[in-house]
Length: 316
Image 1: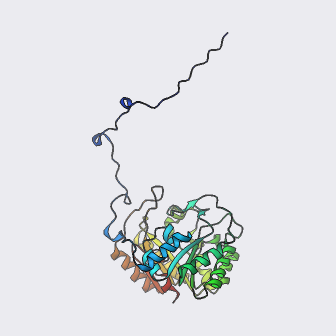
Image 2: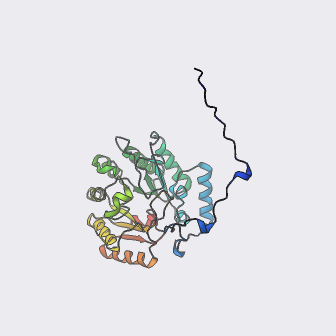
Image 3: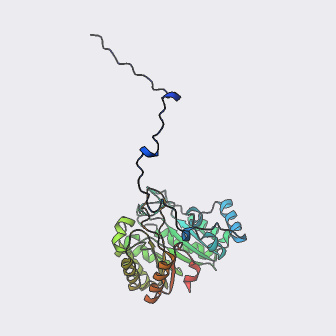
């Protein structure tokens, strides 16, 4: 018997007269917009940064391809912070081993550690003439030391090249590993910060691999082992209740945290958690009053507040 093979026909681009128009609005189901898709309230709008200092630093960042969170994260306070001589730098690459639902940093397999990075960051700080530097990093759960050695090397390099620059280190939880946390304590930054990010109930949903109590334990361990200023931050608008915010503030004071930042969560992309509510400036002011009554040394509370907002003031 002769085998008959079916001919395949190559699909060609459809001509104009075959193309179908989408149905009009009265035939399309329109889904209700999420809070984030709606028009942001007046108090969320940001003025573009201006001024001689900003223009000068922006030029340096672009010319030398300096890696600052201020620019890559489009921080709303960039102009104000740069004018005060403060900037934030991220180390250990730009790919994180965790997949927090609020964060715009890429998740995946990070690249190899760049052992020249400490000097690169220190030289960037020198070029920008930064008076107070904030250093942060992605989580590196793929490394045995979780990045803590590079952390210590970076602080040492900044001290060596910029002896008059003060430092805040915004660290990951290192999974609560005390040996890794000890490396941070050993280089004695003026401020060590670790963010709980949200209330206890929402931690698994928002931070996924992180644990609320681990973060509290890290903050207490830092304070009990010689760190002069500890700091933490929370985002609002993720569905937390008012009483849960008060509870979180009390939890942070119970572990002796000195400085707290409270800001509005904004959705980085449609793939991230949607904003559940926009907190009013009056409510932020109320949280500030409560936090001060609890005994925090410094409180930054407002819609556009981010972790490093007015960071230079927190060393006092």
